[in-house]
Length: 461
Image (cartoon, rainbow, N blue to C red; front, side, top):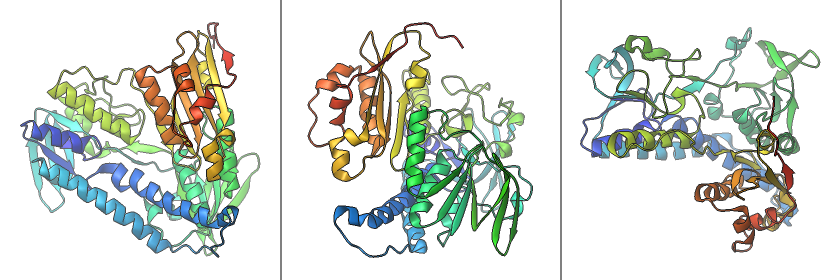
């Protein structure tokens, strides 16, 4: 029994079915999970439309004149939906082709290995299974602000259905989801204000990387209010009014409000206590490094278990459980490399250690940094914002981490990741023959530069 058809549940159901298991997959809404339906696929499709609008406005920089850019929001949304439908239908077809029984409805535990499914078409079905895999994902969190539930606030799902370009979009939360939407709508023509509780953006990144990212978004028209909290919300004919508290108390008026303050695991309806499944105070299911819960035969995969909430991690969770059940079982979450890319423009890609983390090590390291304005391909493209950084173990010359804030930063980061996976040294990358002119070729220059040498003494907090 698989509950939820995200990027772990769907593939796992298919693989187990192909291996001869009798598999049922319960899905309450859409096959494909968050990524296909409300996350990666629709947001990146919208971001692509916004990028085209941005480039059209910059056409004169390339010696072109295209006239005034007009955004047809219904067509932008329709294009997004067409891509989503295509991916969703593909996911559904794959599950059915594998021989999986697809059950439309919502499941909850009535005992450790027994589920009650409220069927979408009506009625109830009771199912018992020796193996149960939970892949129910997470949903946008709601902020507890007086009046917020009465002003028509949007979340990261509903904002993708707006049929007009907001005249002034206010965003509560300066995390990566909020930043992607901030730039997206600024490029479509909205005035955008981001309200962030912390002192700076991207608190887990090096300070200069976060500053460069903020500068890039500000250049696109995004306004940031840091160390600012929303204390109340009201709505009238003029729009939504937010009372905010920060360096100064003020009121902001906008046409739309996006609440982007994190995500909550979809566990409330599962009745985990009936099965004896342990979850933390936030509702995330607790698992070991093979994704087993505390109940024998029950696993949790993807965002519902907490930890890095990325599609590629959810898919790797599938591979871990698949190998535990059908292969040698050597694959676990221990020491798993976790790359991520934020699809702002420039993209922010990161894996492993950054400079700040390297300074906490008890061994010498070298930190190589280079602005994207030194990259020939970036100059040719007219996309020179950002920087590249790599952390190298001084004794072994092997990479410990990399950060790329730049054009196609996620793709360039993947090259650094492959070097980490394959044990390729910084010296090898410095001397490698890459085709010219490519972004990857910039690694020659990155590792030819003068590094910052740090570490060597035990770190004390």
